[in-house]
Image (tube, rainbow, N blue to C red; front, side):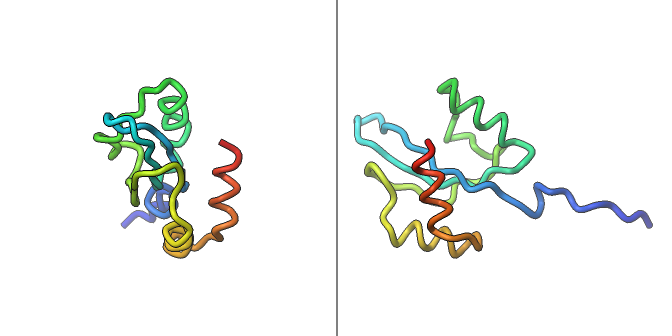
Amino acid sequence: MTDSKPNTDDLTRIIALIYGMLESGSPFWLFAAVKPSKYQAFLAAQKEGALDLYHFDSYGEIIISGEGKAPPDDITLKVAEMYQTSPEVLMQAMKEE
């Protein structure tokens, strides 16, 4: 029996907040959990405008999404709780984008 080292992608996710426009022209936001090994590819696809949210599986998982310019505070708090981080960390990431 071989001891295999746990894959970081199996244990960790990088939480990303994504903004966009719906086909109707309304703004939307979504929180995604991105696999660490796919984070650079995710950033590149996002920068190029080539991020396909309908086929996001290769990058990780979409946690929650909604219409509007920013997620409601209660959603941000819940995501922070789910992923054991502080809302300030999530909000800091928002301000940097």
